[in-house]
Picture 1 (tube, rainbow, N blue to C red):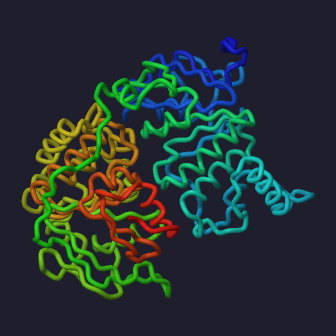
Picture 2: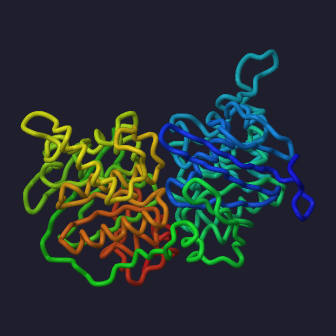
Picture 3: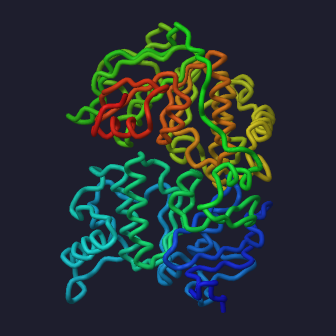
Length: 513
């Protein structure tokens, strides 16, 4: 039986000597983690450090090859997430798992529906009362009858947390919970976490944002190369020290110094309108990105950024307006033609638009570039050329993989992202659409991607940058535009605006300076 902590409390979670092997790789090796009740325990580490594998083991998605799991002092064997849920463990994934066409209530109860007397039909009254009770108890209020498609990102995350609390979770695993939140939403989340731990719940908080980790955590466990290497006190450790423990280097900064902006327009949008039935997704969007410029687009998710990117890439047909590349009208061009003309694309959702998860890495190198060297020879795919270039990308971009023949789904999220960035920069693009380019990557990979964007910018690349990391957006951008409900509503100076001012402009709550 696990030993009580120094304060006498039995750990809510104790993982001892956890080892998990997959073909060609040891994802976890002799990992130890102790989480006390009523605390926020952060787990940090670079991509490929084994954090996700460890959490999936705790959630019953993997069975460890070695080691033990104890929950509230009792050693357990978890065969599935259902076993973990029954033990009071709930997990909120980085990518929300909500159905937009259902209400909050319907999403929360899905798979755990309370029945009316006699077992027939959904007892909506009981479900509604319980959801409201949870919201009031933990500071997570949200209207149970609202359609999820109408919710902002912060409220969607509340729904995900309510889902696990509804099922009786007392141990919450939060995977990158602030990745898409603006500062005000982060503050609201942290307030809710304080309420949760004040009522005795335990929270395991996985994040790459070290300043946030230090602000919210009671204890920090650092992982590197599949094992735990240190436990730190957030009151005494600095972000720089955490970064060194994680990757052996200093905490990077996105700050860009000298301007490289030229007067040569690469992408020009004029009066772009995009409709969905009778609703405007984009309204009269006009902007210009010049060679050597990073133009940042700031907005809360769901305000038209994704639709604008899809219009630029030719994935959506605009209702009216003009798109020009280096002075040439391309509004009616196909996505393939735009790709061949020099468009690079780092998509917001790497799983849906960036990768074939069941295909090997070398085939993913070809994806979106299947008409260009070194991927083709004449009309045929050049297998040897694609494989050789994939090896180069893996080496230059530090994609951690046992082989280029493993499927993309076997990589951690950060390594998937590095593969995509390497692929998109390999075609010497004229224009790069970079949507959340460092989402879910560690500080080392983040620094590498920032350096890459800065260097490419200095060589004349035009970049449209979309990011939920406001420090990244402010630091990398030469110019910064705010989008709200499909309209460009403000232009701000990245050299003077603060994240708080920018967050206010993004939500329509105030003016950015």
